[in-house]
Image 1 (cartoon, rainbow, N blue to C red):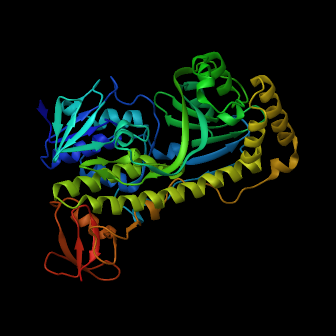
Image 2: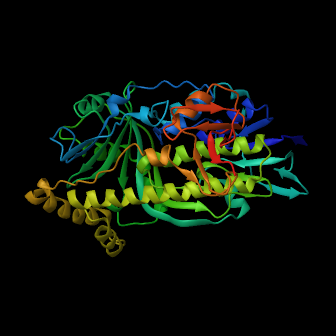
Image 3: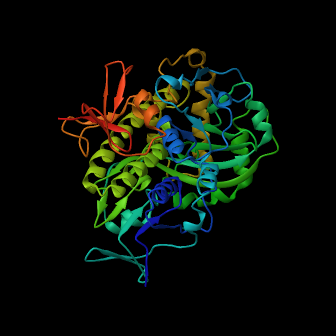
Length: 475
């Protein structure tokens, strides 16, 4: 029987960040990953300001490309045409943080973050059984641990095995998710400086994410409602293997076709807006996507998870009550889900303005679910063609677009309960964070004037700064 004091399940971004903190705190740990490789799909790509502060604390360096090349969200009929609209997404981060937000595909993120803890990661190691005896957790009949951390995602084993319920809508919308490379497409998009390209035409509605300029890495997400009347993903698995069809779908987003598309992977993504009813059970603790899932607006999913990991690591180091971790981070998950849902609904309004009303499309999908796909797609194309030809739709300007950076949610969030005092608490002011970032992480007493121009540390008792940089007023 092997004993691992702290066992992390899942070597994605969240499990790796938790591992880095445990190494920093000299907490013995191991990471089990059921796959034979770390994440290959680019998936998440936006690293917000608070996440970049955490990476700075851990001294993790990343191969970032110039954010100016990803500055816009562009709305198009087809790549190569004049945009229906384009919005610049960049803001001056310096008024909020000492680190800038950044853009990096998740696949590259995990490849670099694993450095320094690679010897703690066991690939091809799947958790199939969890048992509890006294305060010891038994895993797979041959391993024991004091704490087990479920960092294995929304569809992972740990939460499901613990029978912890999800609250919210698990099935908002389903997408075909394609990871591919194309240098020609990089050249076609150069004129737009876009991170996201939203495509609305009679052949396809999709969003293209430009992940990496250097090697031409992209992902494209296409609503399944536009491809098939079938709602059961098992009935349409054949689409994943049809690379001729997949390349044709990608080319429908362009005015002129490209011929260097290399398909890396094809999958289905079920988008939801949910959080776990509880974040821990018998020293098994859920972290990151294992305890929340949300629409992609704002990139809240991975960033919320990384910040979960930081919060939890300090709780473990300081032997704090796990209830405080749940109180603090569950509230943030709920708040971020609400914001992501708000902007998901705005994306539907934009789609309705430029092409389809998703609710009407779902009604059509339900009505046509037993018909052949070619008939279903013919109806979709007819509807799209009428909209595309209508000059009213070509003139529509949607004033309320989707932002990239959310300062309030990234830096300005506040814990209402937990290990934070009676009145709640938030991140320490920027000036305080800058002073303390290179000091030993411990609890400080500080005093600062209302504009944070004069700051005294340690010799006063007006405000408490926690080791994770959150503050509360001392009673």
